[in-house]
Image 1: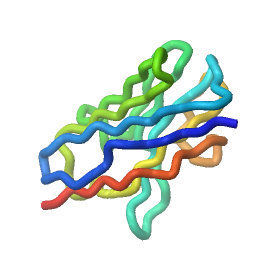
Image 2: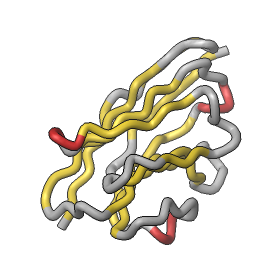
Image 3: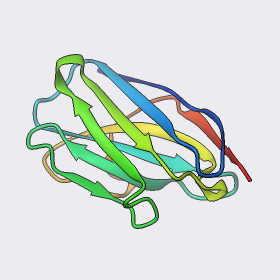
Image 4: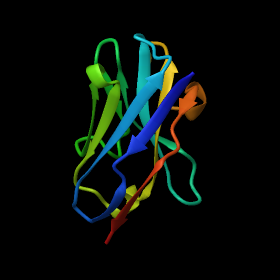
Length: 124
């Protein structure tokens, strides 16, 4: 069993920055993918960014490319999402997710493990 715990959400003004963290514990895989998804009110959950534990490769949604950066701290089993240039449309609950394998999938049905989510609110 894998447990994922997110932290770092909050309220920020347009143009501001936040750093989300996801701590993984339990049964972890050396060959696995960690990702961030988000869900805004009334909208589908969408992929934001993903990273491979094995080779550090990353993938981003077009809407956050050049503003968000995903990184991993293998020693602490933690994944971070650095978010800069935040916009009101980034307001959502952000979820950490994990899947076994080497491909960074962008649909939520490919991920077996999920955190409880952390709220990010960007005021205009």
